[in-house]
Amino acid sequence: MTLKKQGELRGCIGKMDFERPLWKNALDAAVASALEDPRFSPVDPHELDGIVIEISILNQPEDLPRPEMFDARRQGIIVEKGWCHALLLPKVAQEQGWDATRTLEMVCSKAGLPADAWRDPAVRLQVFTAFEFGAADSRDD
Image (cartoon, rainbow, N blue to C red; front, side, top):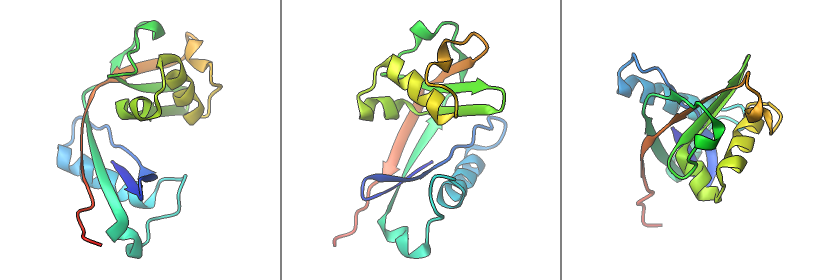
């Protein structure tokens, strides 16, 4: 679940529990995105009119056998090493104009790892695709 305010990121947290119903994951992700994203203060009720919600439904991630197989134009990426992990949606690389290498560096940095950690054989990389949609602000201001 991604929350944006005036086109800028306001919160983004996902729930990747493929054993639970989609609606439960979406509900939990919405609450977490609004209240628990450590990069932002909790969304205040007076902000709600200006929040745009984008939902990404992820396919089950698959291990990436070799980093050179990563297609940043259509795949999202997950990095994991020990307690450090992070995910970038496919749209992030597209919106930022990043190639595969830059996307791998950025997901490592997001996880708190060195930017080149994706080259470490001990790092687990997974890829996924996503169906993304959102509700644009339709108010007449």
